[in-house]
Amino acid sequence: MSHRIQRLPLNDTQSVLAGLTEAGQQFQSVHLKDLFALDAERFARFHVRFDEVVYDFSKHRLDQKILSRLIDFAHAQDLAGWIRRLFSEEAINYTEQRSVMHWALRLPQNDASHPALAQQVHEQLQRMFALVEKIHAGQYRGATGEVIQDVVNIGVGGSDLGPLMASHALADFRQTTVKPLNMHFVSTMDGSQLSELLHRLRPETTLFIISSKSFSTIDTLSNAQTVRLWLEKALGQYTQVLRHHFVGVSTKPEKMTAWGIAPENQFLLWDWVGGRYSLWSCIGLPIALTIGVEGFRQFLAGAHSIDRHFQTAPFAQNIPVLMGLIGAWNNNFLDIQTHAMLPYDGRLKYFSAYLQQLEMESNGKSIQRDGQAVSLDTCPIVWGEVGPNAQHAFYQLLHQGTHAVSCDFIAPVKRYNANQFTYAENAGALVEQHHLALSNCLAQSRLLAFGNQALGADVVESLPAYKQYEGNQPSSTILLNELNPYSLGMLIAMYEHKVFVQSVLWNINPFDQWGVEKGKEIANQLLPILNGEGGEMDGLDASTRGLIEVLLG
Ligand SMILES: O=P(O)(O)OC[C@H]1O[C@](O)(CO)[C@@H](O)[C@@H]1O
Image 1 (cartoon, protein in one colour):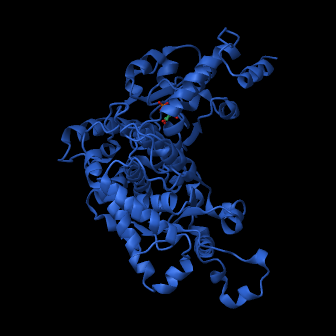
Image 2: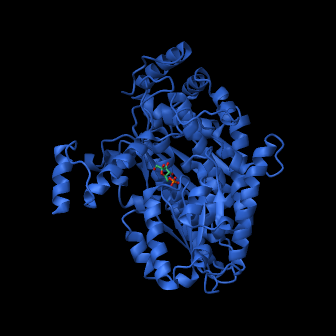
Image 3: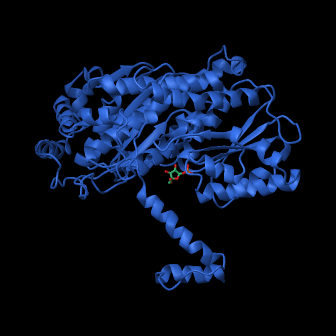
């Protein structure tokens, strides 16, 4: 349905979309190699350098005219107004009557524009920082007086993916602690991660974080219940066991209390923080435990830098705006329906999993704000893997398959600092490995873009058809000066705002997830049947009934 342009909210939008649709048809046959041949200044023209980031969008099938039309699209959809609304306290998540203020989580403490908000946020951050420092100093002890050495984050979705991704990505910046501290993540409701982990952990030295915005997600509560039984079996059913071994992060203090989490171990966030935007709040405790208080402050500062950039940079120089517009151009006008995330840094192993939730849970919608069906395709399929490994897995499809795919290549400019003691001995060899990864990153985006042209025109003549490459797969390349807490904060915030930009273009609410909620409701209806506690089979479809009969034997 890529080119449907009926039922648009604004007349301006209609005419801009008609122009873009026509341009998209023309650009179907335009090849990147020709765009580059026509314009030696293409990189200079189509990249933005801001703070720690370079965003190169020259390998997209567009020119200056298309860019202007896309910016017209943003204006027609009142993007500037929506950005102002996002950074106000307006309840723009209208289906849940909530404001959307994850940006407030990274406000500096002395912020003059929203002093009350900043104070509220920093109060919880200070409490979290105090806990982090206590654990790092070996002063936080379990019920038997032993120092905590393992921390297990129990959460799912936004209460897992962001903390997991960032803790892994920033492991090089691990804070030195009195005793080594190991972070673990448990999310799956089937208990498989827990059953493996509990064999390795000692109850006396393990702290569990129950991380759930709603404190009602069954996945998390069932894992929490299992570890509680495990702890109580080993240490006894005493209040001090609960008090010393559980920390809770949620918007629901009363639910944490009812579960048995001591008030001093309850950390709060607010309804105005969406789950998939919550890693900046105390949901980010595992990140703070990994990189320490100063590291976490840097992480917030990086995101804040992008918040400012997003609010102030002109659209043609505004990285999240460009990311959103170019994504829409590919998706809506060039018919490129899938988007691959390809970081060339093993530390970003969980980045695509994280982005899948951020992008697809946010913009996987089909109803506009006015209740009408959308007029353009919304979120593309987002997927990905660490680039070098993906080269040996699915790149063949990118190069010679039949699907059009757009890609984001991400890499740090610098890696392996000889001054960092862990690398001192191997710095030279590791720096070469980094260069190897960078050369592959550049080679792949080049081959994807230019196809045969990248091989050299004379070589191509002699090649059989099956060795030829069509190319013309567009990509962006994002370079971070280095991957550190600050630049990762920037990178994540860039994608958060890109998602918002696209939601404005598509006129949808990116902050709810009613489809997911419905799935949870239906699972709750089926659980009693599987538990043998009754429940209605009659209203079920034949397939579900048949499967239940097999499951019940
Ligand atoms: O933090 P909670 O409330 O346990 O929710 C976990 C996740 O479940 C969802 O509601 C739906 O998957 C996500 O939006 C959220 O991040």
